[in-house]
Image 1 (cartoon, rainbow over the protein chains, first blue to last red):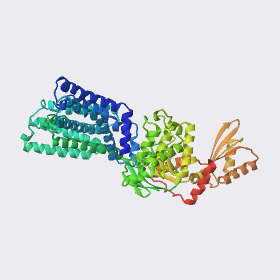
Image 2 (image 1 turned 60 degrees about the vertical axis):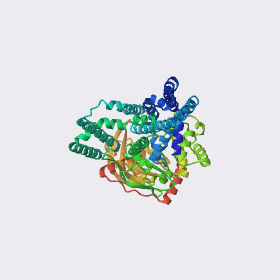
Image 3 (image 1 turned 90 degrees about the vertical axis):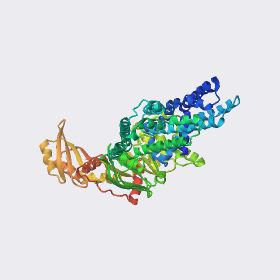
Image 4 (image 1 turned 120 degrees about the horizontal axis):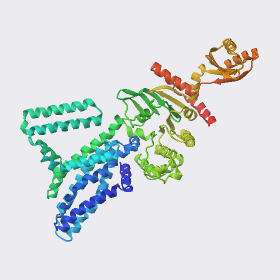
Length: 287
Length: 340
């Protein structure tokens, strides 16, 4: 695993990727600090972090797009399969390297509150709490990016889908106000989601029966639930959309609450997508 | 040291490898021969743990490649059909990564890297980007990668494909050299290549093993149905009559070749082809007609292969493999040196 980690790190720092990622991240945080902390003279550093956090929707996919897709394109994944390392170690090594690249600019950002505190009253616990939350949220987005990269052998495709998915996640709360909040609207949306899940299962396992079975079971369950308790479905879709938002949980930290459920939520997302990435890599061996 | 037991691999319903079983012993060069699409790469991918099998198993020194992949993979080095190289790195960086991933550290790693660079003869290019290297050098870097960690068996998938003739000769020499210290298994669809380098040949067709023997034995196997080609100055009917009078001859085709000469292709079932040529010579001598040409056409591996592949297609069942014995291998080593 350390070999993979070192190798990935060398690749990132030999190419422009790590520098572009770091530069844009610092730019975004810097703009936020300029606007809130310097111009408006607000002493809360956490606002600077949240100001331009949408930048993650662009720079995370740029960072993660090549991580597995490029191995496939160059056929170097064959080497990884033939080495005495497990697929889980490969994914873990790659993920840790990505986190390291992410940590470098964040380490610089960690200096900002200290600098500001020399010129005024900065409440450090919320500043560093938010930086930690920002890190874990980014880590969750990176895990999502790794998974998307594992689905394809085209970097561009991985980046495009990554940007789309993260942007959708970012705006899901504001979008949720426009979607139908009636019970039937929620039911229809959930059915569509189940079918999409079925398509994903089929893509990952190449098993028609499994995906059809899973779809049928979930649809039947949803149908039954709708039949017996239609009231539960009212407003369900907007609720799901705002619950799934990774950014919304971050704003809780920005508002000064160290929300442990948020941390647990992010960790769950990380484990979930890394697990899926391992499965996606393993699948290549089994098709 | 490697045993493949009833290996089957189906893509959807198409069997790429079909109930394949064989045993690879220590310290030989094995040639894995078959036309494109015969299942060579699939078999090699399964043997190295890169691909799952539908059924059957592969044991490396008794270790199942799927149940105990870490220990099993340490015992083999693999070069896939397309060398898995990171183009933006130098061979030295690349080999360091592979060595570390194979669990080498510190002085052992340095020593191993130097020694495989030496063996693969890539010392001059070790600090150049892989993307700027020629195909032959890339192939060598791939082989160096397989050699890291000092595995006992090295599996090379079509290592000479796409190289120019000089590079091919160099890679063949390298394989021959490696065969002195390692068990080498390499695949190819070029018969002459396998014939010159290998101690043992595995022929595979449509996912089935059709032959497993020394190159010499395989040739002998089909030498019985050999051909003679003779050219003479005679009338066609006269020649047919003469040939019909000779023992051992089962069939003959005649063809005018211009200038009053005629060429006949004579088939025989006799086991000793020289016996037949002697009879032909004596018959012509008795008639007082000069033989302008008398060529013995021995079956080449090519013929053996085509025949075996045809047989397996018709019968749908492979020829049972003859396992190599220790005494045979020594003779073979000698033969190979003579050829080299």
